[in-house]
Length: 588
Image 1: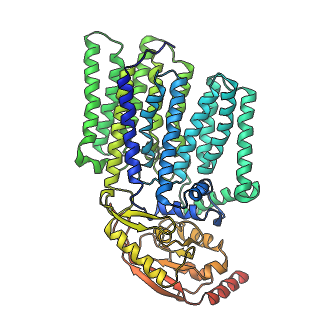
Image 2 (image 1 turned 45 degrees about the vertical axis):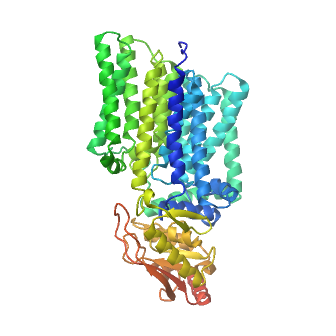
Image 3 (image 1 turned 90 degrees about the vertical axis):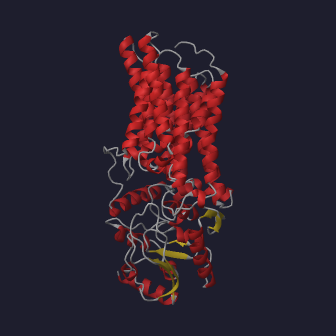
């Protein structure tokens, strides 16, 4: 590899400074908003991770110490989660840039790359969950691989231990991601000739140690831990979702996003090619390439398009950076008739594939699921730039600035249209109590509704950790706000073919004593409603409840499934319900 010249300090400092802007904006959002579906599912899990016998992701156990550390405060947990993600990405980027010899200012450029880390919170959900755990564990995995490529035994062994730890965390976040990540790690170590017997044994040994330790801490015995995960997989099968592990999805994006994607691909590829031709043709290509990149950014800057860009495929611009770099570098190597450096190629493959590893096993379109982790695409692109055989410091700056600009604008667009909420984050200024998690800022309408529900439920005797059976199929967040405990599952998810059967299975895992004193949430006209007949199949009388409070949930932006009035009801005779439930179980 050729020695890198010292870059212009102001370029590296500028990209590092602008890279902090997305982080600051993301921290600003931590005080606002609360999604009453997916995010509340995370909170219910974090509140009572040991109460549910089956689960595929065990993020609740991993983040529970964090919740204890911050006293359960939701905003504090969000802030720590955002900062932890950013720090891990910056450290991972620094180690990779240094090992691949991409730049002589690895720390500054690593901070610049860290500006893309907030994309992982693209839905506006910064609460710790399975996606954040998968991303953070993935960053730790990259750190481990980089350390294992070090020259000193201490770094190699430290990397081996961290590889086992990151593998365990990936397993707890998403078992499918752990499997694909393991394959990528083996590819990197084999290609770079780091697959030594002792190193491999250390990785396997540390991984086995952490898995066994985690299994004992979570379930008391490895066999019970395996049954937990297997039961979670069975639950997904019953639900009728998340079962296609390997598939090829169509990347459906708006026309304007396709245009931006194409402009970036052409612009980056032309800029790379232009740097190898000092004549007029090269100058023309460089100008066209620069104009194409500027055009893509202008498209993203136009305010009327931000809401459209907040829809699926929002990070397509960053994929364009990576694709354009790959095409440009490959074209150069065909022209120069020489091969890519083994280390550079291996790192590029791992980084460009890491978003796919995170997406495997998701119920969403894989392309859309990959885009929040686009920081790895950009880092892979920078590694490939070094593999082109000469310094591309000005192009590195271009890639980083375009990526940061896209990140900020995408976060702003998401603030305009936060996931499954009523209004924009800008309009949320009413502090609202969220159970034992402190307060967050919500819009006037949602804050008024939740305050009324909490006030009337508490006046009727609702206490902290009161069990609640949620038959709305859509609003586990009401339980979170009340400070109650979700029975059977953190979210009895409705709207799927097997929702009714899975809800019944989950509720049967609870004791009759808990079921008998549980309050009930219903939404008969809701698009995700679970039939009240579930109560009868548990030996409970559907009529043995008294309505406490009823409200009309506000329509989400954009509208999704139909909504109806939601009612919170209290059991009229818990002891009779317990006896009936017990008799039903003994009879069955």
